Length: 149
Ligand SMILES: [Zn+2]
Ligand SMILES: [Zn+2]
Image (tube, rainbow, N blue to C red; front, side):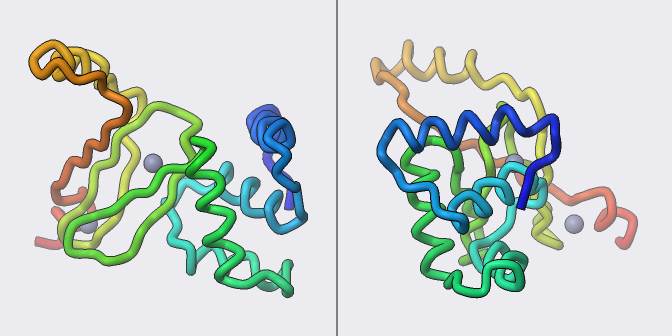
């Protein structure tokens, strides 16, 4: 699996980072990284496994989970959990964005360049906490579901 030319730099940065941490770059690991960089649909682990298993026949669902866990620990992938849905979705954090979730069909849409820095700063000022991470989710009804009503 290879990445789109304009994602090549990101891909190489991730590989270089993992290499620096002595994390072995197996073919399946590289495939999962490339998949996550290219994915724009917030896949579940099962979906990633399903999409890659034809090409990487020796890969198991456990391998996918194991790799996602490493990418989360290294800060390259985030988990997206949506209420009323037990599935965990995964997202590559190449760009600052928030998620807007459809309460009817469960679709997750990226809201790009969302700036939450003011809210975080205010939270720190008002609570005295030093914020280390944050999770924002916005729920609504997507345009397609709005039309069906
Ligand atoms: Zn919808
Ligand atoms: Zn996203």
